[in-house]
Image (tube, rainbow, N blue to C red; front, side, top):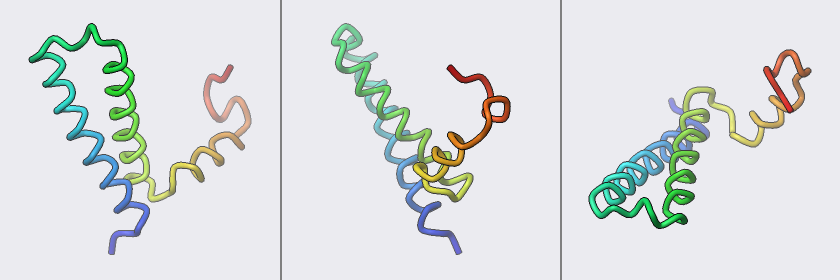
Length: 81
């Protein structure tokens, strides 16, 4: 049985991926890349898909995963600012 977190992740991944593909197609087809807010919107859709992928793979909600990542020591979490 798939957990609710994984279902939510798959749902977010699907929505983000489909909408980013449609947005990318529209931007290329209608030469909309010059419209700056479209790039930000496109980036947000890709981020939604990546968050969904993370939830679907790990089975952990994004906020909880982020809190666990922030709790790691510097050398464990990779390069940090």
